[in-house]
Length: 85
Image 1: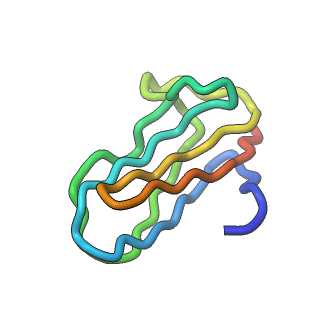
Image 2: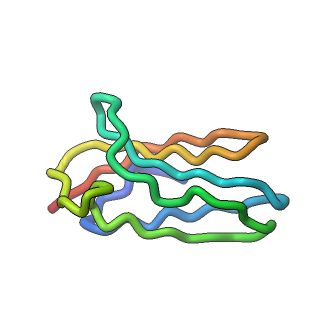
């Protein structure tokens, strides 16, 4: 992925090379986790998940810099995002 994503809704795309447990979480720039988007086993393939800019309680998060972290048993990927409301 190239530059930071700029949207009110952010689509996260990922490719999983083989079946594994996948966890995708969102944290703010200060580090606290604000949302868990995926926490389940996935088969190999390409996936998309949309973050609607809300935390786990359904509260809209303020505009700012956030990170998503994708973890599997074999790798971790971190990316920066800019949420604009």
